[in-house]
Image: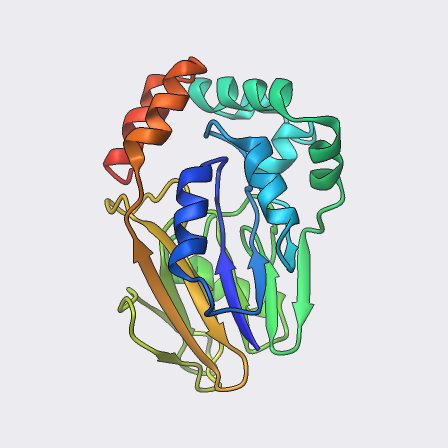
Length: 243
């Protein structure tokens, strides 16, 4: 089975559609690692599109924020404004969809979380040390995470827990060779690695091969809708810079 692995759509329907078109015919099932909503202008459209796909989806921190499960006072002012707008915009049916999302899922050799195995909704894995501290918190060989919006592979290199990080080689096969790894496919809707292209991954479960991918999308189209809804300008401009 081939899996389309996506994360951090962040209510960016244009980017979501672009990724689905780019990967068309190359996957059988979708794993979504959370943050379907938040920041962007299309929360209902993204939820409704995801519901039409064969998928499993986890809850992210912005999904929880839209449900009132997190204190939005901990968010920066722009993010808080976007959360409040999302809360007002989501339909009751799509809110119920978000309410039912789990925070972790284990399937075969793979653990799925939004943020990290030890703090599934909130912790950022941004360096090898934090990755190393997370390996004891899952039992499978591999863990897929999102949340940071940065594609990366963390590999445990010895029994002492020493860990190194590797940037992805896009459109190149990465063979899962049994070494324990934490893999982030990057963000569809709001990349933050100074590359504005949407990021996603394809996993072939039979061959044990994962592939990071990037694809450009119509950023201006999304920015126009965000301005029409009077979302914060900082959230609008950052899309074109991948920040």
